[in-house]
Length: 81
Length: 414
Image (cartoon, rainbow over all chains, first blue to last red; front, side, top):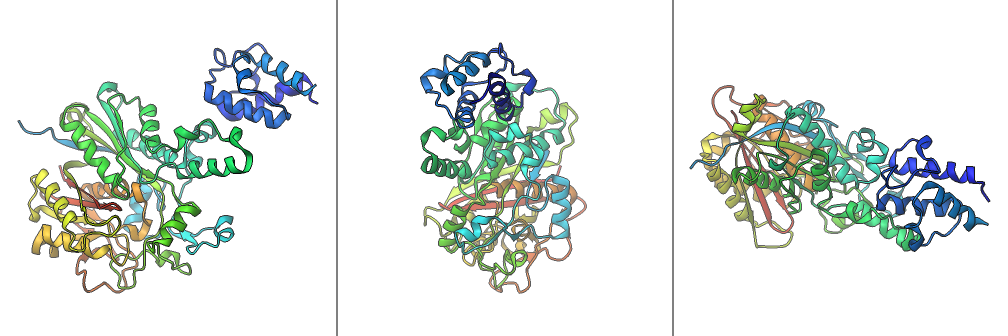
């Protein structure tokens, strides 16, 4: 099981690979759409990559609730518990 | 009213014999082969009957950023690389987005993306099929990516006519400018089909050369021992511009795109009409379109794929269109060097034809050791042929595709 810090770092790597954004820009309070300019197609790619990396399931209907990076970290942490 | 004159003001290419236009031209004059044995593990894994091809000499992923490349099928990557070079070469800085169009062709489309996604579905399930799969595999992917890249709002078109696609894109571009719909059109063709499935399929139909022990000598148009074409990949791109638009900005003009035409054989799904009737009609129509007499023509970049059945009907058609004047026309079969870039071939060969007119020099044909006596063309071999240094000259570029598609462009000096 990964700590919240590890989940954030792992997500930041995934976002960087998909979008080229600097890992340092991927912070808990950042909105995927508003702040990081991630479109729905990239978001789905990031979700699937995160599922593989953290060995969790993120249902499609849950994705719309993951508005910020922090939401995603919390969801993954809870799903791992 | 006279039709608007259309000129060529920018060139771009990424090919098996050069990742940009200067390298392509240098090698086309020198006569080098881009073919080599494939080192991919799938060649052995599937026991492919053909083990070589002509890969792009500079991978598109070396030119594009990682994130950019990730969202594009390899065919689209090639299209973007070539069109960026052509756009830069044109020197266009200010333009009306509403008057900039794209006509970017492909013969096969995003075959790598399609088949990778199918493998992923079967091995890992639907959840792992990438959400970008559809926009990456669609055949209009290259045209769409180029229009996004340039900000072209006057329409993005994708002519698809197998191996005539790239040349048909030139035709579409010319029509868009003549009609007034666009002042500038980025035309081109892209292909990235060096994948085991297309190799197996082309091989099944006996279209590919199986000279596995001699990849560089395998593509030999007009040679008595020609035994099929060699798969190539890459893209070519040309900036077409209304003459008055180009003159107003003081552009460097390579040549005039004087005439184009497209016809269809309605004869057989793959075999060319043995009399070359559809090709003859295309040649005559392109010359009529550009008000060109046979005597004006000094050079032909032939389709000449190196298949036993394909090369001869093209000769018959050229003879019918140009008559005895054909004896004085320098013919280049550049697929001898680059292999067959399928839907990109007409675009790359239009780049070469434009450069031949601009530099008044025709590129060489390699591997022509014993010319087929039934194809008595004046083929450029050994050294580049010098075209007339003075006066107006015209060159033709032919492309033909499975389905009986014939496309011809006529390019004139300015």
